[in-house]
Figure 1 (cartoon, rainbow, N blue to C red):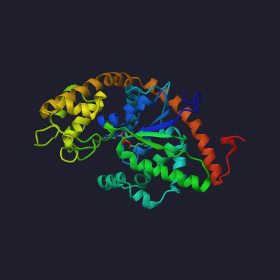
Figure 2: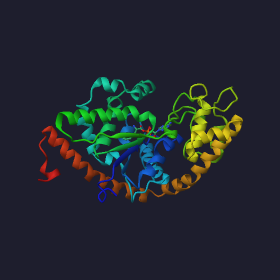
Figure 3: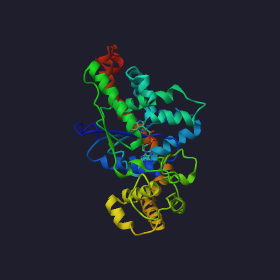
Figure 4: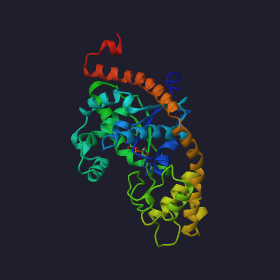
Length: 342
Ligand code: TYM
């Protein structure tokens, strides 16, 4: 717990409440968060402000925020060990984001691949928030003195920017921020789209067959894996360049079961693609079934979720003030005595 164990490395991570999560979110991020809870001081945030960079239906967004908190808990995030909270409940995220905007160059933001992708997909709404999104993400991280950030490969560029912003600020104003390290899981860091294995598996993929949602029933998971795109080579090898579909299935199989790439090859070489697809589906179904049962129970218990999130926000707000006070002092902004005390 945060107050009692200040010496543990601080971990912060987050996901956007923009729809049900995929197997990619789970293997690339959430599953790793769970394993860090005992020997890290963890904060896990539902980043609702980030979701607003794309138009959202307010009622749907509201439900998705609670659903995402239920997903965190159903995956095994324990609110007794980790701080689980909603980003908009801690106003310091937006506040620090503004200050960090002034330490971020336009050119840096223009280079962000996620901004380029999203502005192509949302041509009618290329808002300033979409552009400065990585600065808000840097604020999420830097606000808590974070040491490690467990994320999938796709967030690496944003993490590098957060490190650059922190270092730039520290060079000008003294050591205010910890410079965070990304923690990118080996096998699950880049789960690919089942229909186009050149792309990452994404919630926003148009084809349902492209993505495994954490809430998909077993039959549908099996169907999606059976229809996964492979190739015409007919041989199971690990070759991301030439056989990306097969490599993706091998990755999913071995990370789901906690095995190695070598074990996957030993198990499947001399076999047909059909066996790889079915056994990968079976491994995923077995992993997801207990999650799905817990998720349903939590989703129907809004009062419990509200209670967990209120407690989490209270703790996060108190922690955030420590860094905000340092930042404001370093910048020469007069400290509000009502807020920070003497
Ligand atoms: P988001 O909501 O897109 O994804 C949540 C996490 O899931 C990982 N992920 C994947 N990992 C492997 N394979 C995939 N196909 C895959 N798809 C998604 C993401 O890398 C991420 O770790 N900007 C972030 C949210 C964020 C954040 C933060 C993260 C905001 N502030 C501070 C860490 C720290 C995002 O959009 O994640």
